[in-house]
Length: 59
Image (cartoon, rainbow, N blue to C red; front, side):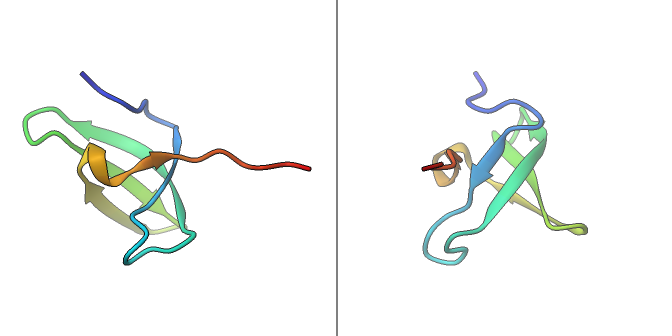
């Protein structure tokens, strides 16, 4: 079962990628990993437990 959908905006792991958001572009069902795009050209795989759904706080 997938936690995120293609196009969802997610927050990357805090240790390495503080305050960085990305967009889910692919889900690898066999490896249970999400491919996310950071910026215009960087793409990285993450496990579901490493990502959190991004929610903008608007005041």
